[in-house]
Structure formats: structure tokens, C-alpha cells
Length: 267
Ligand code: IPD
Ligand code: CA
Ligand code: CA
Ligand code: CA
Image (cartoon, rainbow, N blue to C red; front, side, top):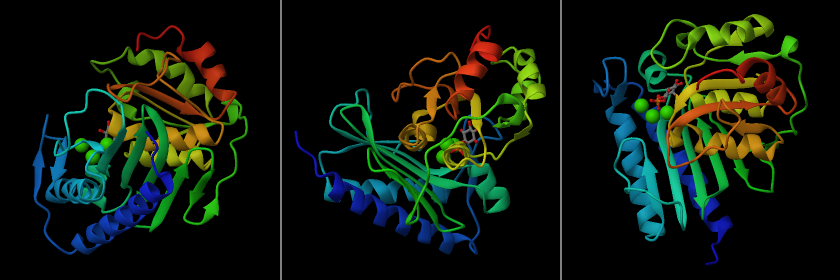
């Protein structure tokens, strides 16, 4: 089946901008915050309302497209055939609630399993990171250059401090040599923002033991487009139908870290 990518892209861009405008307009209002899987796993009425906004728009314009959204208002997506919108209405909800910054809307559009359009909107700064496969990555209208290689000793690595403290998911000691070897570490609390920071070269790599498809669907399209590497922590392929670990980085650095720091991990 033929799809009109340009048309899908034009709608996606205008909807993400409008959703961002609505989020900015919500700032003076009182948020309705509740918890999901644990007391620190927050969700707000704005997360839910933003996801519902996209679903209404997408189903209105493209009734045959399917939607996978974090808050569960979309479809039960069990295959990636046809057009699938993978949406995180607010990535970085904890930042949204506590800081009203350092969060983003993330949308990856997949056609028959292939990432074709990626959009990540930094709502507070009105910065839209945007990519159509094969046509480059843009920050608003400005083209983002291809990624270049980096050395471990000069790299800034984004990772959450949770993973170098004792935790139930991974053997935390495995990451300590890497944390010591890099130039510095950062933690921004939004996977989508961390991925655009890799895409723009503000940081060199980002890794985490567990994320969902909506956290990474858009970011991996952009990083791949710029020549970066996108795998799980074992170097394996990412699957948009499952949760997995994530390791994205500049080229060269990725192989080096996998071989010298991650290969013995049980991720
Ligand atoms: C979370 C953020 C955070 C990451 C969590 C995600 P949410 O997404 O991306 O940086 O560490 O694993 O769940 O819940 O704010 O959309
Ligand atoms: Ca969440
Ligand atoms: Ca998320
Ligand atoms: Ca979210």
C-alpha cells in the first residue's frame, strides 16, 4: 500500500505544535496528579488529555492508522503492519510536575515496522526536533549535522544514578568502570530529551536498562538518520512491540563501550 508521507508529516507537525500550545496554556492551572505502578510513577490529567487529543486528530484524518500510546487510550497494538503512531504524550512527567521543564512530546511513526517519521517537541523552549527517514534531522528549520566519532575518555554519558546504586534490575557494579572512564555523566529525566541530546551531539551516549517503545520510538529514527547507533545493552536490535534496555551513541564509541564495558552484563 502507498502512503502519502508528506501529508502524514504535515498533520503530525501541526498537531504536535498545537498539543504543545495546550500544555503551555495549562501551566497556570492546578495539575491533577496521580500515581500508576508506584508512588513515584506519576501521571497527570495533561498526559491523558494530550494523548486523547492525538487520538482524536489521527482517527479523524486517518481512520486506518493505529496508535500505541503510553496512557492506553490508543489501540491494542500487537503487530507493526500498516501505519502505527507510537506516542508518549509527555515524556518526563516527573519533570513536568516538579519543574515545568525538561519534558517533551514524542511521536514515532512506523510504516510496516520501519521508522519513517520522528518528532520530539521540547514544549517549553518551542523546539521541534523532526525527521523524515532519508531527509535529515531538523531542529525547527535548522538541519542537524551527522554525528562524528568520540572517545570514551572524552565522552559525556547520560544515565540514571539508579543503575549504579544497588537495584533489582541489573548488577549495578557492572556500570561503575564505565562511569569512571567517561569524562562526565548527566541525567535529564526524559528519555526523549536524552535521545535528542545524543542526536545533537550535546551528549555522546545514553543508556538505560528498561524503556518502553513510546520512550524511544521517535529518538531512534533521528539517531539512526544521523549515523548514530541504536541497540539494546547487548548490542541487539530494538523491538517496538516490547520493553527493552537501550544504548544509543555516536558511531565508534558504541562498539568500544559494548566491547570493553558491557559485554559481560546480564541486561
Ligand atoms: C520516563 C522518562 C524517564 C525514564 C523512565 C520513563 P515518562 O517516561 O523517560 O527519563 O527514566 O524510564 O518511564 O513516564 O515520564 O513518560
Ligand atoms: Ca509515565
Ligand atoms: Ca516516557
Ligand atoms: Ca509519558
